[in-house]
Image 1: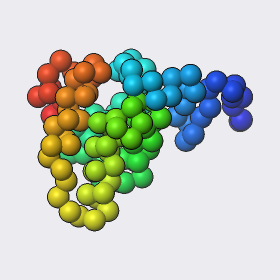
Image 2: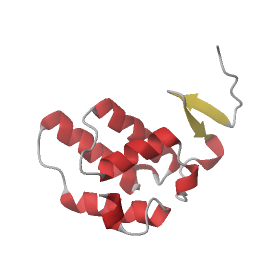
Image 3: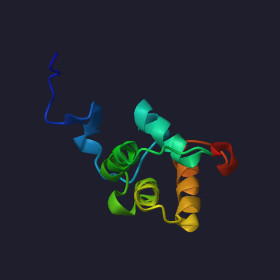
Image 4: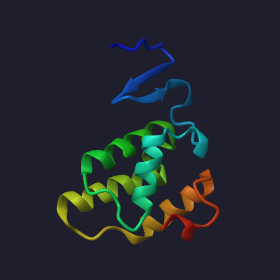
Length: 115
């Protein structure tokens, strides 16, 4: 069954893209779709996703709804996808920034709660 989309709310891969809130730089954890939250929490966890396509799905959402190319969740997702594709070590500093960002948007009160 086809779903109607308004010009203000389009969907890619069944994840809504809210045109009015694109690159607002103000992300609240309550605004993050469940699937993206799950992938994002996985990226912060002890056993992150190993499918780069899944990781890139989250990267795309954070790029669109966060701070664009400077969004720490986007940057870490891209970094992790690069790690998966090339089997090279990932940037620990970028991971630390990602955890701090997740705390700032309300995914957890402390960084250690994300691991």
